[in-house]
Length: 126
Ligand SMILES: [Zn+2]
Image 1 (cartoon, protein in one colour):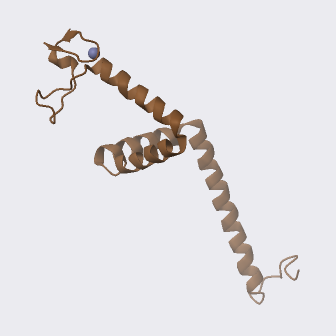
Image 2: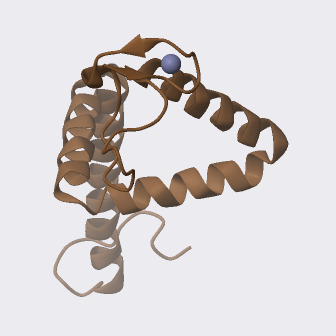
Image 3: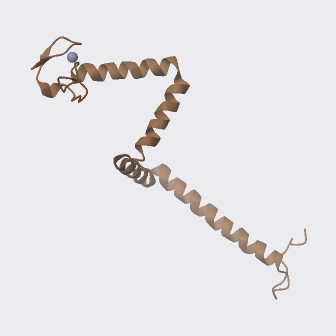
């Protein structure tokens, strides 16, 4: 048992996060108090300076996605998104764009080489 310095209640050690930097090996505040403190600090930082908060959060997400665990989480989220309605719509848009690009390239080639035996395209001389 250990007494939380925030709420003052005695709780089993499992109710405290491990902290190798602390002489006791555990946080001084219990998990519930710690979570509440972290959430309060996040709310305060967001309210005080939203631009810096978002920039730092974005940078942290970038670092996390470079770790194996973060990369796997990002990959899993991406696959979930691909299977979602938004992802399927985006895939359909990509497909349409690809087909349109291919069609446009084929036309351009015929316009650039008029002597290839085929009749000149309508509007090619515009
Ligand atoms: Zn507590």
